[in-house]
Image (cartoon, rainbow, N blue to C red; front, side, top):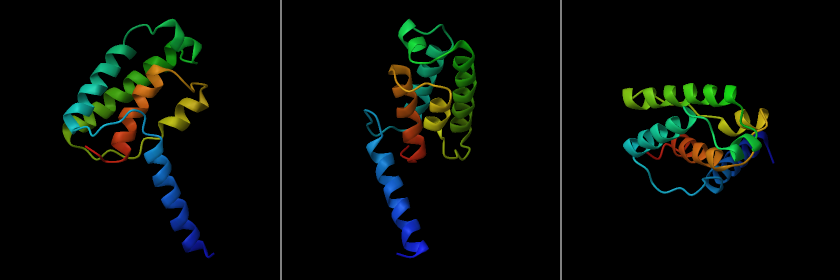
Length: 117
């Protein structure tokens, strides 16, 4: 198998993984994604439930993610192009690997990454 064929295969695998990793998704419009971001930002703007801290969240990370999603919301509202959001790597690198808040954030970013809005 040549390099080009391998690259194409890896791209197909990545696309399939992105489809598999969409957590509880349904088709969402741009407006629905913006609304979901507002709800997530409201949660991030307040102290999180104890179980989220057990899942690895810290107050510093909560505030960083709040600013991050506020920027994404601004970009969506203004019609700006949204680049791929590597949320899994970001959160995994700081020790956040499970929980409802993580699932909610993934649901939003997976829809944006798939350009399904």
